Image (cartoon, rainbow, N blue to C red; front, side, top):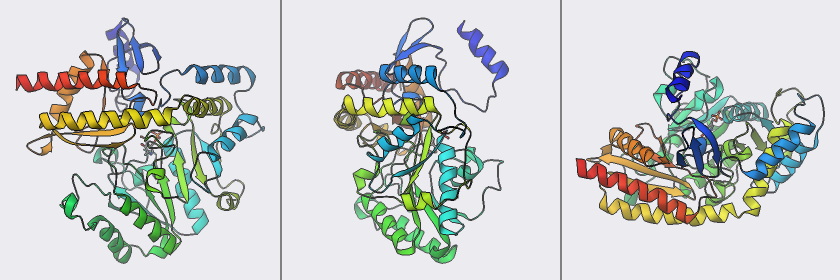
Length: 428
Ligand SMILES: Cc1ncc(COP(=O)(O)O)c(C=O)c1O
């Protein structure tokens, strides 16, 4: 049966779409996924950092069923309550002034909307993004994505007037600086880019992930983001925060920007917003969004009633079940335990993160070790733990379990990881 389904999939689905495991799911609930033979796995990937409320949260499932029975599709022909209620609910949790919404279907689509809004609003063409960032795979968003060359190979030329400056990666600084003697060369580089390549008064927006996702689960220094905010305000550049992965409670706050005390001019939300249902949003201030003229942007499926109902239930579940507080608590436990594991396992080069967005970097003699990580993944999977990697060298574990993971479940997951590390160490 297993081989049969995977074989059939290979027969009809493109190999371009990578499926990370061979698990064929029978059902899933919370942090657990059960395969067709009845084996249970802990999913510490949250289905690509998306099911923040866990798989098939009962409140979300009930909301989907109820909405599907009443009204499923508008296509911008009819008004319906869930989209308005969702926007009102989101407005209460997004950073100050981020109060008006355009709903679409995926992270990439939200980023497309963000680029269009910034260009339309400012009348400028330039977009600045960061080397290492991931913003999606459609042509506009791909033009910003530089987390790995594999996303860009053979697709050039991409959108013109897009410029890149290095993301502030302190563990593997682009400029070879040490963390304790950092002069923030990454910011100086950006300033030079604005002197050599495009003047700031021609830049529509600077877009950044407040915590780097696919590029390596990297937390930037707060000072970098503050300087970016100041720079944007000085030149009327829109600061766009891509919170597709870091948002909706992933870091223990509704949005990662709250950790740094910065407020964007535009933000993008997707992934965790509707617990796995396809929904995303571009958010900005009312005066900006209302000046976007009718027809300047649009969608057939975006803000689908069933997805909006799922998103409303997602927000309710996160609030009612204290998932933000839990993510901070369990994340703190995980960071401490992993840092203590780091002292006895030299293959762990770095541990970093906020809430339940934690990166664990695997190294061999200080260099990225993707083979070592693959070996650990295989061992963990055999023991019932699903993990996911990230980073340009694919040597970083992105630990992103659902926000309702308990300390005991995290302890069990990290026990499995430690057993795998010990076994691998013993065989070397
Ligand atoms: C920060 C960020 N932006 C955009 C995207 C693209 O989202 P999607 O895959 O839904 O198009 C992703 C996906 O991983 C992401 O992490």
